[in-house]
Amino acid sequence: MTLTVLAALAAILYLNSPAVVEVADTEMASNDRVVTAIVNSCGAGLSVEVYEDDSLVKITVFDHRFRLRFGGDDCQDVVQPRLSVPLGRRMLIDGSTGRALVVPDQA
Image (cartoon, rainbow, N blue to C red; front, side):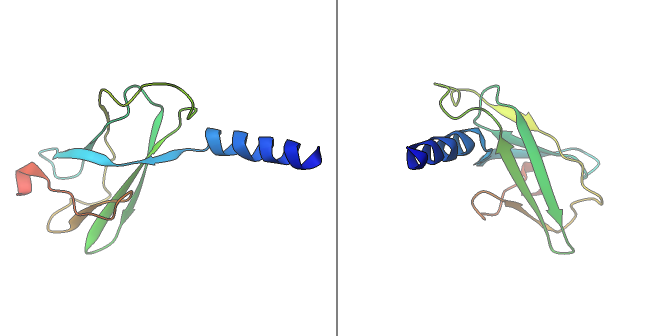
């Protein structure tokens, strides 16, 4: 019985933990400091983590929904983190995939 209770608690913790969401598209504000990251999450409670150094900016978006909610990826949401300095020539990276993101204004 103890093992069953522990397994149930582990499942609840997993289902309530934030999931990393892939960035579908990006836009950059004219001041080169506000990145608009567009994700397929449809009304999810989102948060964003930004890592910056001299050569890159990594954006990781988290979805805080309970994972058993049905649907939810059929529309898009945005997060708009502000960079500490303009993006400039630094590479923009999706923290969920590690892939480089193309910023249309800089392509």
